[in-house]
Length: 238
Image (tube, rainbow, N blue to C red; front, side, top):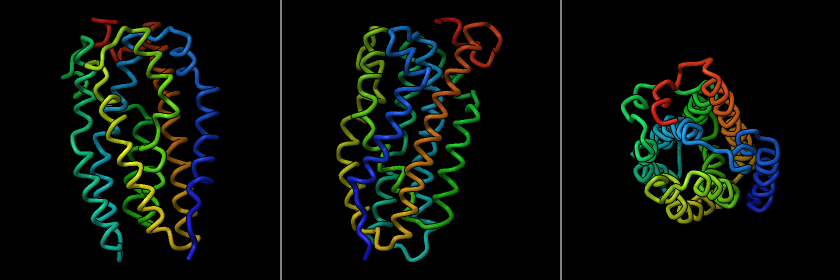
């Protein structure tokens, strides 16, 4: 039986995050103290959009997977239940800094966000059912990498925990979830194919998520220059 090396997997995560944190103009803007409420809102709008689908694609693994171990099937449904409605915290954060929540509900995700959403449905419905754990592995363990970024946003914009409910809540919830993911990985990864599938989804989903930051940055530039009305509703409190 092939045993997954969680330390090796974490090294790959760290390498990708190092590249993102070093090269992302979105991250540079925030860390240099230049974040605006509009930039924060655009990012949270995209967070709202992809988070809205996470419970569904997680449950899809249990529905579509063939011959799943009972404990993994149970994990998928249980975790989907716990993730349901988390997008509403992102919506609340956007509203709390003065923007129109109804306009967010009517908005469409950016192309990079749509790509991540579609990818997660695809890997949840097809292929090795264990592979979605690759997404969960880094997503439930993200705060060690982005905490300085969140603190920079909070400091620059003078935000309170009430303006950052999504991140405050997940920083607590995800500790427990990360342990559960690790347990599932060690329990369910029994072949080299399992390990390879988990690793591929981990890398792909993290890279796709980083592309959302790039899309957010590009749209923010268009917003600032007035070249796009995509987020016109943010101008009331930009």
